[in-house]
Image (cartoon, rainbow, N blue to C red):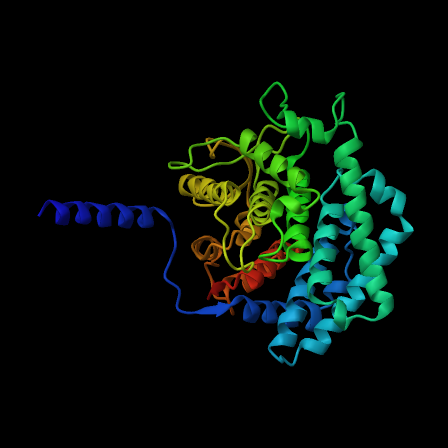
Amino acid sequence: MKKLFIMFITVVFFASVQMLTPVKAAASTVSAFEASKLVFNEHFVAGNHLGTDHSTSHYMRLAIDIGFLSVYTSQAKNKNDATYATALAKLNQAIDTLYTDVSSNANNYANNAFQDPGTAQIFTASILVKKFNMSDLTATRQTRVNYLYNNTKSWLNNTYNNKLVNNMTQTFRQVVESQTTNASGDAPFSVNIVALYGGALALDSDFLFKQYGVNQPTDYPFRNNIANIGNYIKAINFGNYTTEGRLSHVGSVRNYVDAGYISWHGKGLALMAHGTVYTPSFATRPSSVFMTEADAIAKGFQTVYSKHNYIPEQFYGFGSSVKVSTNRSQWLYPLTWTGSQQTVNWLDAINRPSGSYSGPVIVAVARQDTQALHRAIEGLTGAMLKGLYFNQ
């Protein structure tokens, strides 16, 4: 009888936890590939998405597009989907545009690798293309992809190892390894860029270096950078894992949480889990402190949502006060890279439009504006790789 009572209490506890998460039952779900197909046809085929201006932050958004097109093209080919040839043509177009800008402005990219997320996003995109699409590209485009991969990797590594952090006598690497913070306990630089860099190195390790069962994560030349960056983000994050979750400030003089930037912390940490603990497939979630931290960031945003019924663009603590009140729930879709279906269900629930709409929730999100489109695309890319589903 005592055991039955304990089991009853346990069931009630977990049921109450689920009730705290605002996830609505969906009428149906679609695979990440099918949701991506809808976005691809609407924005890349019927629309003129690649023809719009992508130059902001060193072509960061075009890099996100290339990552999406890379994975979508590969999966369309594997599924014998009719969109494969068109997707490959769009991928070729995007690669050519990005290569032209980077090769024409190499010094600018090299000298500003940590000034915005663009260079790290290009490095990530080039890894995905090298992993999934090289055999489909012409020799010229293979050379262009290798140029993007080799140079962005080199520029990021050089900046991390040798460039001094603003107004300091320490390099980025020295700050990270010594876990140096400013007077308010925050990082003395924008952490999201370093998180994306660490995540890209981890993807490089997992996708291009790993031979599962042959080598180990510690064999990857930049493995220590991955681990040190992950540990640094853990050190500057705040919050309790079991109650409100974990979040972080932007860094430098910005001692507040930014929804978009901190979602990249979650994505970066999830990738760093893969770079430090190899798994048989990318769809398998590694047992890693970095994945635990990434999940805790998702939980932190859930705590904020429970207080405001939306995600403010910028806020303090766990939403104790709001700096910029614009709803940015849609900016959290990069958290799909954690591979958690529960997180995807929550994201869809908080982004479900109040009026009528067609298709999965994430397709409706992609229609909102350029920023939302790229956040959705980034989320779809991770979800395709993780084998996740989206809700109608």
